[in-house]
Image 1 (cartoon, helix red, strand yellow):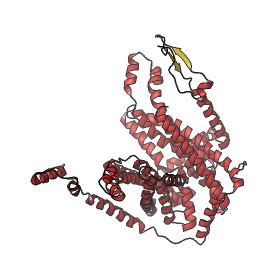
Image 2 (cartoon, chains in turn blue, green; image 1 turned 90 degrees about the horizontal axis):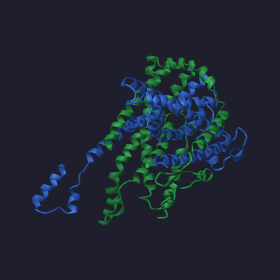
Image 3 (cartoon, chains in turn green, blue; image 1 turned 60 degrees about the horizontal axis):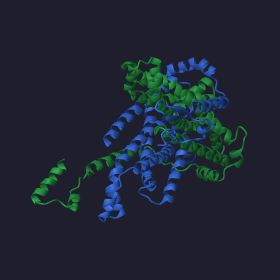
Image 4 (tube, each protein chain N blue to C red; image 1 turned 45 degrees about the vertical axis):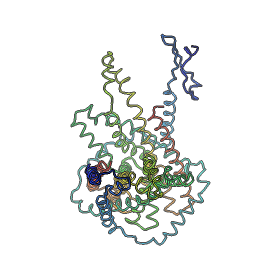
Length: 285
Length: 284
């Protein structure tokens, strides 16, 4: 606004319209803002770099780097296409199985949480309390959940499933809440006016509004859970991660390569499928 | 009017060919086709997936219910944090934050040129665009913990490996989000600048950069939020930060101290989320 006034003033004193070039010469300069941002970043980087020092490679560092590269370019083909239960396809299937069960259980468990935390359904104090609980579930990293569940149920794929069910509640219910709070209540009123029973109102007024976004959220979470399930194996919760880490530590590079290829292909395919389904859901196929 | 009574044409899929759509004749003589519900197919597929998954994982809901009280005991201890442990949390906590700051800045700086190279409205070379996007997709498939583990093997244990792992992760995510946003910017000003005689770089600098910059900063902040959460666990594989403490406390079954670690992480994460959300709102 200020700029416009200045331009008008200049135009009046010169008694003519400004040309584009002159306007350009008078363009707003935000260099103070940019300088502030750059300074802030420089200070933060300086502060953090003071403690993070490059201590050089380890004795075996170059060997590891060469080994990983070598493994990726010449993976162990017997392992990559084998069918026994220590080979890549079986472990990938197990990883998918963990993610499927974890996501489904999490999605079901998240429904009560989401309804309890919605402001348009529950009174405010209850909704706030449940929201804090959801936030706490979200903040504890999945690896920590897995380590705790291992203490309780022992290692194995089952531990991965229960870990993922709990971890998924946080994000899924957060997105469910948005869907529930966006519910169009006019539809319920008109169903009421038509004399529908509460059951009919839920069946024809609520469920059709929620299913698409609920399914979309669940598929999105499946995508995330699958990536997560590959790392849960590191702590012993089943899936491909455990074998990958074992091979890394015992420096069998060809096997590492096979696992990495399997993992990359799986994640790429699942991401492609999930994006496609979600796009279809969003546009109402 | 011969089309009067012909049904409205719907796109047939394989499913519709097997299960013919139901024909409904309306009171005015028009007839419409109603697709058969897909629900049975989806339910059968889902049931099969659940059954197979149960076999593959050996998951048993009974043991979970039996052991659930044990988990509750554990959670109860976590909810009673041991305050005297707090001084020992501070240093790894700051390590974690420093790792995420440096990793985010490095990753974001590297992401900018690649994002510009992989946006099809600025770079018209189809080959380069697809190669860049493919590399980005590959990087995003690698789990952060695995990258951190390999870095720890190469660069020795400590915060440096964590920083490298976070930088790689950030690079993949920010570049992807950024090129998707760059493709939606308004190219009108760019063309206008070129028509006025500006060269490609000048036109890009003054027409595209002002549009990209806020989005870029906002994506970077969002990624920083994620990185603080992610870097907390990198210590588990020896890449420095809180993860080492968490792993050690769980190993000793010292759940009260673990509660303290998680509480401080919780406070920091909430504070950073709040701050970055405020900044991102200002940017948009």
